[in-house]
Image (cartoon, rainbow, N blue to C red; front, side, top):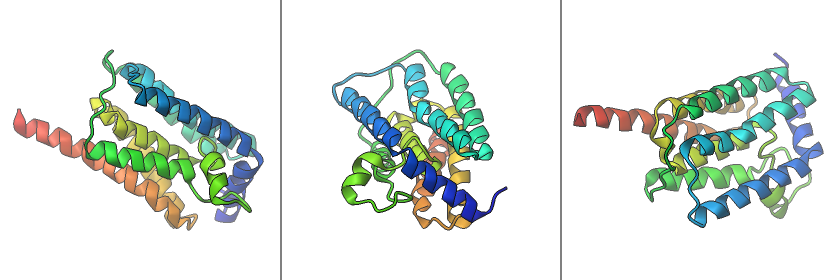
Length: 207
């Protein structure tokens, strides 16, 4: 595996050279959020595929930059999430105002303005060109946010798979790359994991 310095340079290069694509992702996510606020509710299968799309984008940009580990990891997990998503019930997503909703919104905001890697940037720049859809941490944060917003699709497998890759990149970012900001991703991944396990335990006790 490349050294931390090489990995960080690669992530910085992606974030800065392909910032226009991050802006496109911000626009697409903004449209998606507005559709949700307009009471549009896609079925769970469609929603799972849509929120996995930014992860496929990360795989592509990692491949372009020569980071084959990130490229392969995100590609494999994206395929697994899509396949798992296609097995979800053919019913509309369920959005409720609860703790999942609140943490989901916070995770989306965190991924939206992720203040790292952009060079000579300002707060305004982060609002539309933070590297969402380009590098792991902000992208996974956004995906976790939507998964929580959609009440984890009322599923166990899908959010558990997302938790695995998110926990890995959260821990890797903090302890290997020394990017302490990735604690935000680690928090979201742990919350998602604990909420899935807790809810399922509650169901078992209530059965």
